[in-house]
Image (cartoon, rainbow, N blue to C red; front, side, top):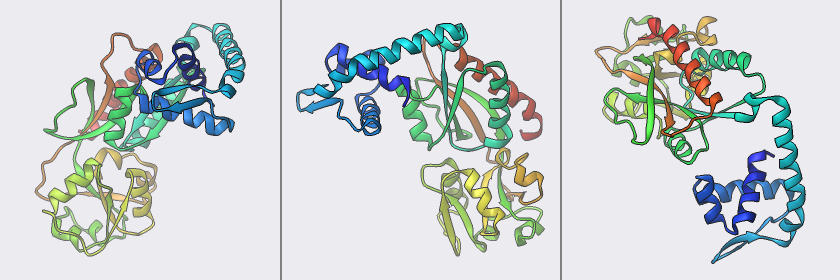
Length: 303
C-alpha cells in the first residue's frame, strides 16, 4: 500500500468524482481508476461505487475514510519530523528499457542513495511506449529509453543524451561468432538469435539489419538483461547496444563477449527523459544530475 493511493481516494471523496480528482491530480482517469482498483484488491473492499454517470465513494469507503485521513495526517507528521528533504519527495520512479541497467543505472542509484537515504527509488522495466505514457501521466519521474540516431524525440519531454553507442552482437566466448572480427547479417542468420520483442528499438534495428529475413531459429524476450542471461546459458546470440554489454558483470567475468557488426555505422542513443514541467521535485532533479554526471564518466569508453 502506498500513501499516494490513499491521497487519491481522499481526493475522489473531496471532489465527488474520479474525473474531477484525475484533473486535480494531473493523472489520466484510467490511471487513477486502476490505482484505486489496486487498493481495493489489497483491502478486499470496494471503496467506490461505479456507475455510468461516474464513480463515488461507497458506504464501505465512507466508513474507512476517517482511518484514511488519520493515516495521511500521520504521514504528514512523519515527513515533518524526518525533515524537508524527505517531505519534498519520498519516492522517485524511474522507467527503463533495461539498456545499461548494470553499467549505468546501478552506480547512479547507489550514489543517489548515499545523498538521499530517506528517498526510495523505484525502478520499473517497461517498453518505450509505456515509459512515455507513464511520464506524461506523472507515473514516472524519469525514463531511460533507446533511440536510433535520427529518431524523432516526442514533444512534451525534456531529453538528455546520456550515452552514444553502436549495435553489437553479444555472444558466449565459445560461440562460432566469437572467432570473427566482425559479424555480418549472414553470419547472424546462421545462429540461433535471441531477439527483443516488438516494441523495443533493438527489435526494429535487427529487422532492418536482416532486411526482414528470419534466422534459422530464434527466441523472443523482454529487455537486455534477460537477453544477456540467455546468451550466457548458450541459447544463442543477441544484438544490443555496446553500452549495455561493456561493464556488465557477465562481460567482466568473461561469460559473455561482443563483436561489432560489419559495415554498419548505426548509432544507438541512451536518452534520459522527463516531462516538461514548471516545477520538478528536488529528489528527481538530483537523480537526473547524477545520471548525467555518471554518463559523462562512462562516455569516453562507450561513444
